[in-house]
Image (cartoon, rainbow, N blue to C red):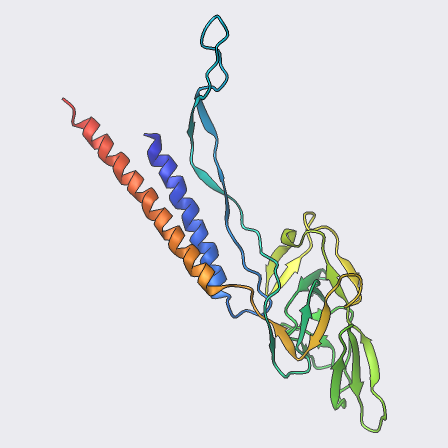
Length: 261
């Protein structure tokens, strides 16, 4: 009985849906995290009687045919790239992007990754790096004797040095944007990679050409809404239960058929 396989595809789809929701909830406090949502598509249909087929020699046609679906599949799990709330941290190397843009990060293998997580640190040479030690691109080195660091809204990094009457400019932070942000590949560690779907990175100066401005001493929080995720979880659970009930009903029908004399 096809209903068994159709309902099982529905259960598998809702299981995947719950996995996506659970990952969102697990990352509610992850800096710069962008929530995902599961999208579904129906499967192929068996055409028992096609719409528009003729029913007589006079040319009359069937107004509505008979189609039996094969169930459902998970089509995609795109990320929702909306801005998360910005929270103050009072840490001078924490930087939030208000608006469009991603910080370029150089990976150890030479590839460039992108992140909204601006919780940066200094390594043993004074270079600006992520919490995993990956270099922020372009490289900026902060002198060890600097008494303070200032980062402007347009990305200019300055340091206050002993004996100097004015701050010393160290470099200019850049941010990148993409034609299709949802096409970025998740790399883990709060990083994304460019893909053919996302388009090439367009790097520029913060606060110009539609790019967001930088906020020193702030971090962007996750854009996960707890109430929405719990509501989606309940809906997924109920859909799973209903598909399980269909399997139970189909099993009872098969049992009744097998008991016919």
